[in-house]
Length: 395
Image 1: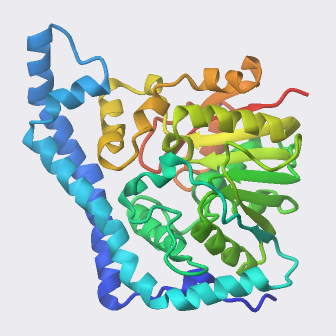
Image 2 (image 1 turned 90 degrees about the horizontal axis):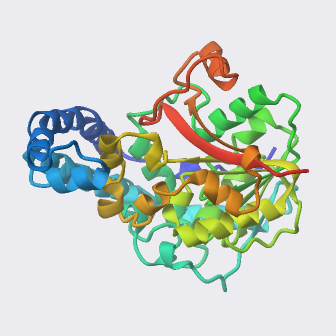
């Protein structure tokens, strides 16, 4: 047994703080469900007809819809409340994180100094932050992922962990195995039961949420996670040691991986590429190709490309581009994902793009049928489906 306490358990919100978290989760759900419906009704009733009258055609893309709807009260209400709710997500956990920060730093240091056989943590204090991370507070999260204010700081990891729970609290089931990694690993195991990766790498791993679940399907695999943010990596490593998960964390830029050629059997990511400049994305995918073993797989979960959804849904998705400090969002989604992969060295016939259900949102039978192509893939929606793109490296 490992004597290190799970770092997640240090944050212990009061009654009022729990109530505040719940309110903000439900406010987000109200914005993304009820107010979204109100906004779409206003678009269908007034904005779209006015555009058609002026141009003699329907809007062709999300940018045209955004320009047409910006003065509409329903849109302005939706956008304003959504923006404020996003800021409130992080603020709702700040007090309890700050109260317990010394204890969390202490347990992270214990994990880093332990002689446990469980995983490792390798930090690089000389690493230069890429400008697409360092230039703004992505997701409106103060300090983004990487900011440090004291020695051994883990605050950004803790805020991301507990704020993330508030962010998705009303939109995802919590009573069973769920999330990106759970869905992708289950999908892989159904598609190819003979595939047994020995080494799995996640790029942009933050606190390990979408790395750790791979051990449930592949218990013998070594897990590796890279990120530029030391506070998140310290937090992730402390979690791994406390939970006896064999995971190795490295502070690296995914554009320039330190690993040797042909190292990994599986490379994954979750909501990673839309945070990076397209020029960086191309370098990351080339590195994925380099460090994958022949026959190895990469599976990236991302937002759907602009070509996969209609103009109105592109408008809704791309709200983050202007208002959530994610300026590469639209440019990434406008790319042809297959072209990005072939440009990185993968053969076109070895590339794929698929949508799969969230594993906790459907029956086991339906999930299996989708994975095997016996049922149609789901449309994209909040935490009920995941859009994947990836490839197999030629042998």
